[in-house]
Picture 1 (cartoon, rainbow, N blue to C red):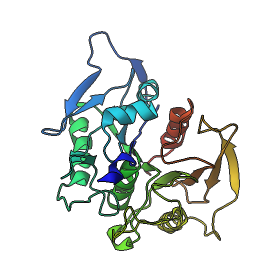
Picture 2: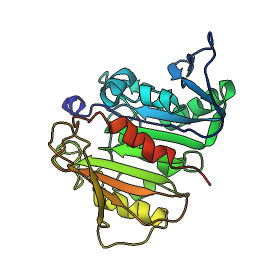
Picture 3: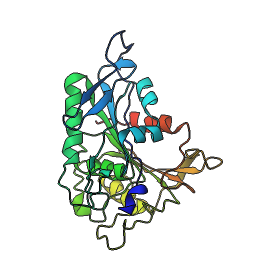
Picture 4: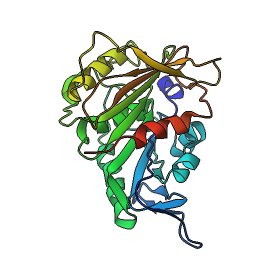
Length: 297
């Protein structure tokens, strides 16, 4: 499908610096493989932290874990911050494109029955059997289709996952697909000039019948789930940052909702940013700053 070439990278990120850190001893493994018939390399941090936070980074439609890392460049920062890092691949659909089954809005276009939610939560359990995982600090970051998948995990697995970053992703307009029984920390990132996943919401193709929600609708929904203070629209801008290297100056506005302790809801709006922005060298560090501040109660 033509949609594929637009829905590129998706990311999941995790990190932490709690506990006693010690350098990895000479000869100690720096990675291992889990995932069975869908293998994924688990990258261990340079500093051993017991237990360690864990981050899963999810690629976009047609992309791969390797391409995701080439885009977000978070592996080095994860290692430095003591975070276990995974970059799994989605399965191939009927058109031969890798995807995450986050629902029909994006990007299960061929009614696949693959259970990516079970696969990804299974990866966490498999890693935990081989390496001490901090169960209070498990994170996911995803771009585009990966951002939709990150939201699906927030909907269904908030008792397991402490925080997600949905970058150019969304939820289905059909809220029945998101039970959201537990609050969870959320960071939504979106470019105002994204013409693939529209900030105002939309559908991915003419005749497609599974529209995705607007950024504002998503934030309003999560603010209610997280029991944050209601606002008329967005809260006031709390600061700006340079997240897009192709746009001069601090183009990204930071919106922070007032939420109860242990939950954080933020929106980073990239003014002039497109679907695949040119990420600044500080992107990875800023994402880890947000994620590592989040922990399950």
